[in-house]
Image (cartoon, rainbow, N blue to C red; front, side, top):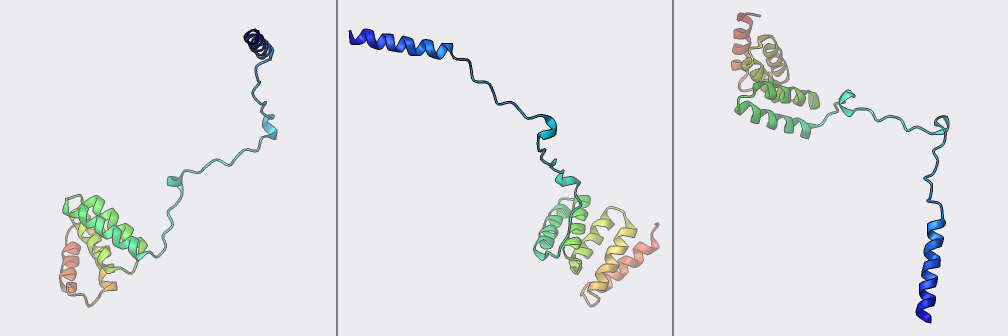
Length: 142
C-alpha cells in the first residue's frame, strides 16, 4: 500500500514536471537600451611611454649583449636603443649601440651613437678608440 502511494506520488510529480513549459532564456533589452562597454584597445597600438628606469635599461643592455654575442646585431641594436630610452644618460648603451650599428654597416647611426657616448663620457678609458672609430666611419662612405 505504501509502495503504491509512493509510486503514485512519483508519477504525479513527474507528470507535473512534464506539463510545465521549459524555462525561457531572459530576453535581451533592445539594442538602444543596452549599455555597451567600450571596446578594449590593442595594447600594441598604443605608443610606448618611457620613464626613467635604470633597472629596465640594464636589463635591455644585458639582453642586447646576449644577442650581440650570438651575432644577431639587429636584435642587439634594438635592445641597446631601448636601453637609451629607459635611461638616456647611460653611456654604455650608446657605445654598445654604436658597435651594433657598425656591425650592421650603418655608419651614420654608429657615428651618432658614438658621438652621444663621448658627450656622456668624455673621459672614458676608451674615448681615444671611439674617436678613431668615428673618424674611420666619417671617412667611409655614407
